[in-house]
Image (tube, rainbow, N blue to C red; front, side):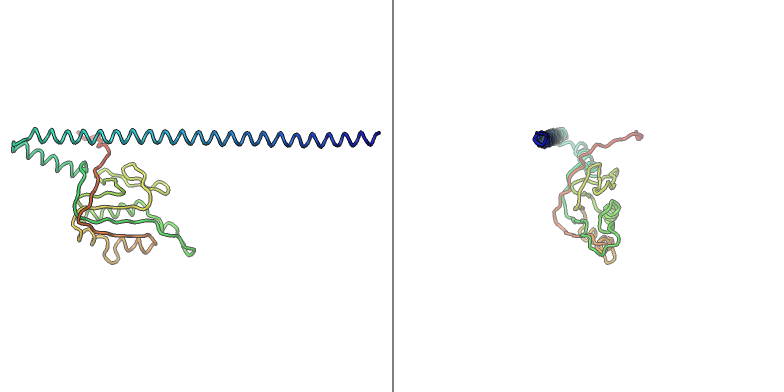
Length: 236
């Protein structure tokens, strides 16, 4: 009788243990499922917000372009055959081009640079990464060679443009740009290309560090206009 009681007690203990394990597994599964669902919902909500913001930006940009076209037509209609007004209009267009507020087309070069592949023998990985000072040096060299308009990945370079590193990306005009970096410059193809492709020049130095470099010349390049807002805090 005593042995039977022990067997029944042992059996009940095993059953309770198995039941406890089963309940724990079920709770864990439900929690994990709930977490996955919550994570998916959060990602979907974030994605929807990003798409909504992009749509608002695109709509705003289209409206801005439309207003600019209307303004251009109003200026043309207002100037008419007035010689002085035509001269003012030409000066205004020239000023907008200098400020980067107008999309420009013309001959020039396109330089593409990108991070190189890291090998096992690499002693300094930073040599294989494009830095902000690399882009800054190239941009300055292009302007010194007579470039009339320069952009990096579509971002127009103006007198107040800041080029800075943030982690693995580079910010230009407060916009984060990723590798590879395409630099367009309008001007004399020969002078622009010669300022950077000479033997021992800066592009040679980058290639020696493992950076991938490609230079193309073109008879017709397009450099987009500056999409930011000019701000003057001290000048009047």
